[in-house]
Image (cartoon, one colour):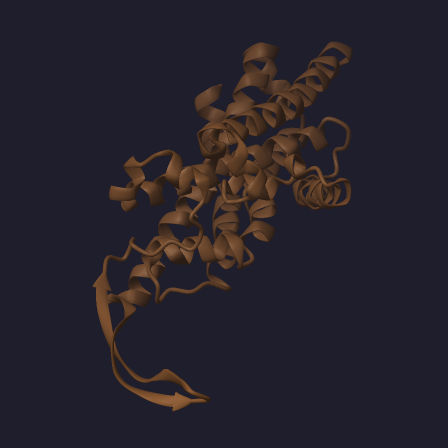
Amino acid sequence: MLRYLVKRTVFSPATIVGVLAMMLGFCIYSRYDMGILYALDYSISLGYLPFFLPIAAVFPACYMQRYLNRKGVSQLILFRSNRRSYILSNLFSAYLSGMVVVAISFLLFTLVCFLNLWPDPVTLQVDGKVLSYVEYEGELLPWDVEVNYEQVGYFYCILNDSAFYYAFPFFAEHHVIFYLVKGLLLMLQGGMYTMISLACYAFLQNHYVALVFPFLCWVAFNFAATTTQCAWLDSGQLTLTGAMASEAPYGGLSYFVVYIAVVFLLCGGFWGIRTMRRCRNG
């Protein structure tokens, strides 16, 4: 059953739609001249990626639930297996599908960054020595400055120097791995939003509502965090660049793990319990 659900969920037209929507979030407003790592941080912090992520990641999961709920497909699958296997397989395949959408988009975004940078290298402007001075109101001010340009790697410049970056000194020497870790964190967030969508299916069978429900939760939690001054509710802290996340142990990594685990257990539990009741009551 697990293989069947993963294949139907991940390898579906909805995955392509989700990847295209996710690519809009990555590329519609970013900056590529400062390097790939900088472009990623720019899309997350200043671009529109956080708005697209809650919707784009759940396309395959909603597509699969729509398939299962029509023509009694779920009943036919249950006849060949059991409720526990059915629930766990659905949870795993849904979470995996959200991660796959983000992973493919992340790799395509990396390719787009390379295409925008190639063949020009990333350069930093470095001030050199002062060539002359001018006197203004009794003070000598620099009149002309010799500017030098230093060539750096594509993964050198970072927009957000978060506590997570400093909590693990290993990343200071391996920016490519740091970039991949940031992509992994985005992938786990993508899977988290599929769990929120399944929680909506626990109470409603409207596929359009389930599709936008993660985005509505994202807006509601961000609004609640701003209104109550409780930044721990803000899912934007999951990028590990926010002030509150930086105060958590290990540069906010513990906060990230707890947040994802709580959402997975609550939302997955809601859907699993509801599904068991439906199977019991026919």
